[in-house]
Image (tube, rainbow, N blue to C red; front, top):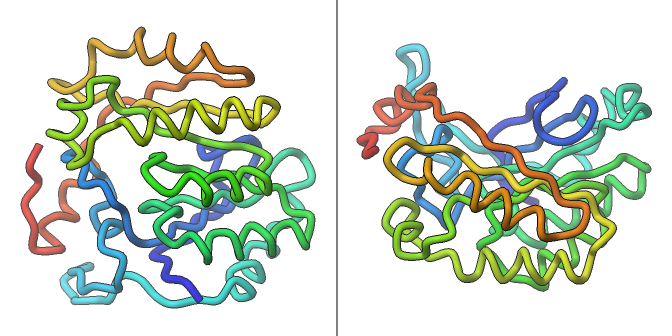
Length: 224
């Protein structure tokens, strides 16, 4: 069993083709600009929605999730599939792998979106079950990375280098959220860093403030 907080069908931005995105709850980072603050706490929590307090996050089995994912199976025949996102899926590593194995059992292509800050053995095991990997690189400056996310970037960059060496044929997309006042000037450098690896593309993600109201709904301040 695992804890998820959302499922999004018909997504076109989280891997190739039409995807069903499963959002796992819990993240080791605290990015100041996070647009899904409800994803950070690994446990279900209260959140104000439309003037009513609701619980964000619920427990589900891999079988239940794959049953829902398979409802859109017809779209996966042309390059789509299931994407695991978060939060950070590596934080629920055993459940993440169970979901990926279930997807493989039903021949559903799987992708993973990760911040890369997690156990490498889990990441390696996941990559063996993936058809696509989305990997966030927010900054190449560790001190700045820690100031804006709560953790340094050494583990993130090392995990990326290791998996690119071990899985050179796995298609990978390095994604960079472009945050004003934080990493705007690093875009070219991060793109060059990404493109040194085989089968790796680069995608800058423009900053937006759509998630700001969620902080108030959780009783928290938006610190950026």
